[in-house]
Amino acid sequence: MQNDLIQQWAELNKVTTNAIKELGEINTNAMTRLTQRQMEMMNLYMEGGAKQLESMDGTKDIQDMVAAQSRLFDEFNTKLTENARQTASELVDVKDKLSAWVEKNTEVATDNLSKYTTVK
Image (cartoon, rainbow, N blue to C red):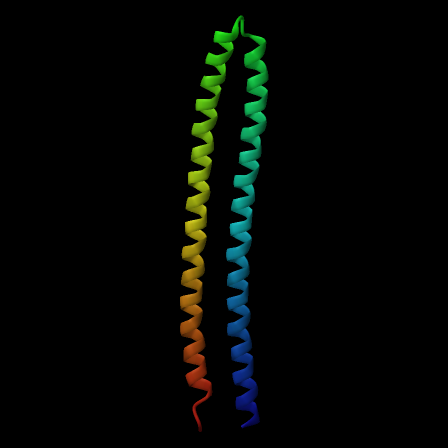
């Protein structure tokens, strides 16, 4: 009886540890990907600022400056929108993985609860 209890406890501990590891991997991957998106965003801002300064250096009059700024704004807006789309896609992927993790572990917990609470 005591050996059965120890074995059950060890199995539950293993299942719980594996679930926590899976959750940690999901979170680590999500944070890595979101950090990469943030770094890309910062690069966009720095690149945009440098291009603005470059465009002002080559302008002859106000019309050239406005045209250059407009082109830069369109380019920046396109890149920014793409980054936002990719970030949203990453977040949806994380939500899906977390939902699958919860569903899987709810089933495991339910199975273990009924398995180990059965009166013998």
